[in-house]
Amino acid sequence: MKKVTLYTDGACSGNPGVGGWGAVLMFKGHEREISGAEADTTNNRMEISAVISGLECLKEPCEVSVYSDSAYTVNAFANGWVYGWEKSGWKKADNKPVLNDDLWKRLLALTRLHKVTFFKVKGHADNEYNNRCDKLATDAIKNYKAE
Image (tube, rainbow, N blue to C red; front, top):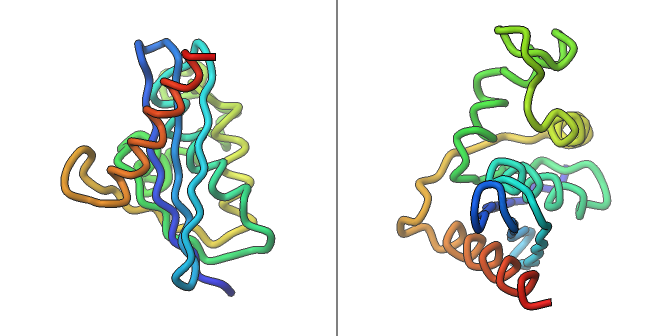
C-alpha cells in the first residue's frame, strides 16, 4: 500500500463567512498543493473539507498520515466520536444533531477506503507544511473575495 502524507488547514474570514482550505499531499518526494474556497461557511467545515479534498485526490487505496491543526477534526477520529455519531444516527450525546454531518459522512467513507491516521500539529507555529496549508487557505479566501 502506498504511503502518503497529507497536511491540511482551513480558514474563515468571519465565522461564518468566506472560507478557504489548503492541503499538501506528499508521496515519494513529490508534492501537490490544492486549495479551494466557498461562501458562508465555518472554520470547522473548511478544516474537514481540506482533509476530504486531499483524500479525494488519491487514485487508489493508500496508507495516509494526516496532519492537521484542527483538534475538532483530529479528535473526532482519535477519540472515536465519529463512530459514536454514526451509531447514534448522527446525534450527539445530548441528542442534538451533529454539526457538519454531511462532511463527516464523506470523510468517514474515505477513511474506510484508505488507512488513515490523524496527527494533531500546533497551528501557526514553526511547522513548514502547516504554515503552507494556512497560506493556501487564506489565499483561496482572498482570491474568492476578489472574483
